[in-house]
Length: 56
View (cartoon, one colour):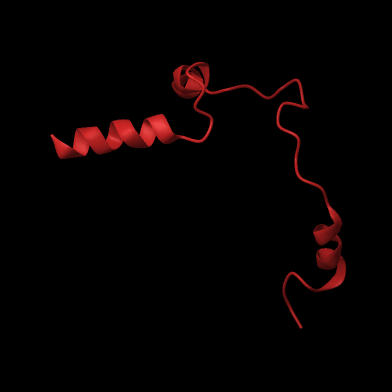
């Protein structure tokens, strides 16, 4: 049997979620800073802007 259930693959189910911002080297990309500053961390503002541009 080959795949994610082989060997250590089952252990990945026990892992917790990653904590964003834990590492000091993490940063927000320059292109995304305006969206994060506006409170949009999931991309809704970007999608709305793209939709508006497509409808023109």
